[in-house]
Length: 475
Ligand SMILES: Cc1cc2nc3c(=O)[nH]c(=O)nc-3n(C[C@H](O)[C@H](O)[C@H](O)COP(=O)(O)OP(=O)(O)OC[C@H]3O[C@@H](n4cnc5c(N)ncnc54)[C@H](O)[C@@H]3O)c2cc1C
View 1 (cartoon, protein in one colour):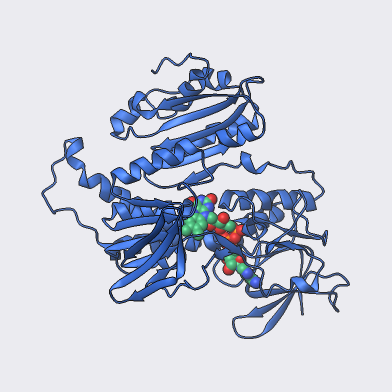
View 2 (tube, rainbow, N blue to C red; view 1 turned 90 degrees about the horizontal axis):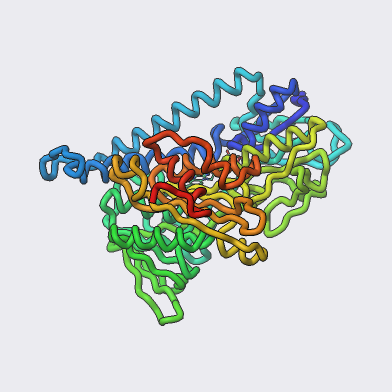
């Protein structure tokens, strides 16, 4: 007997489970098909475990400079117990995993545990879209739905010839379950994941080298942000090699560690470390999904959709990492909500990719929304910019964390906020105000005029907005 529902969701990550909750709230009979654990990459291999490790690393780094705060700690009294660091991470994930399971039960969502494959027209339905699920015990189950949402996510991209072995060559999945800290690591790829790992491992005392093919780390962020992060990393002893690509044919790995040559315009560079983390992007999970049984199209492997997240088969939607674009948990969740709104007869507003906030949870944190200065110029926007250093903000001085700044880019003609780029303490929380400002079409003056409590880091954003017109009273 098949399971019959109104909405079936293939994949239980943040895109899938958020869509399922909303569908259930709208009174739809809903099922999630998940082959691993509810929560997906974000909860088990991404956002949450990495942030837990980053928090432990931050606590360690803070304790090492405890004397700055007038706290005397005996020399060598502060040490990393990596087993307990990992245990805390596991507990954090388990706590959230438990909460998620309760949430599913509360909303009456059926969970079908197994690997799903979409089948074509069958005895169950004249349309493609029924999901055949291979259950853990080898039995098959069919899930028949009026609407299907594909939310199967992504996995780490590997470099041909440098495939991960989990010991010498790691993906971010492997790095999360490391049993002990290496003495040194070579991070191939200086994007968000590479920079987060560089920050946390450096804080734990690991010797870190980043090699990045582009001319700067975080190449999609504003250039001022990349420059500041590079400066701060170098001050902490992180080696950064840019404009250089590793050559897999030169790789050697042994119990002594790894060695590889990177080619650059200036010539070859020899890189060695105890192990290597490859963080060069993500590939969509579409293999074995049965897309060939449907009219669904893909582009570069990612499922193509229209602005309402419908695939070429209009009753089948796709959201999250599997469609590419902004590969972040909150983007996946937002797309899930929009897809459900649409299949329920609504007309969800499309959020442009640049309006989705982007965060890097390094130390210090980085967050941005809107265009970079270069993107704004490429779009022919006449810009005016202001940069407010955290050194001018009382709360940052109290915290002893004055590095970084808030950079605001506005349209010189219309006075619209074009982009906000923050590097500094709690940047990832501060960006929410800028995201709201863009959603509400607020002007910089309106944000500056809104009263920011003192002393808070939020003053930095308000003052940066006023600084656009030379009206900041903070510096
Ligand atoms: C190291 C790391 C750190 C990250 N940190 C952040 C962060 O701090 N903030 C942020 O916003 N984003 C972060 N991300 C990105 C974030 O994890 C993803 O954007 C997000 O998880 C995508 O959600 P999703 O629902 O599209 O897919 P996923 O979370 O990947 O979930 C897809 C689910 O589908 C299941 N599945 C796949 N195929 C099938 C099948 N055939 N049958 C049944 N089930 C299937 C998988 O098992 C998985 O559970 C991070 C990613 C990584 C790797």
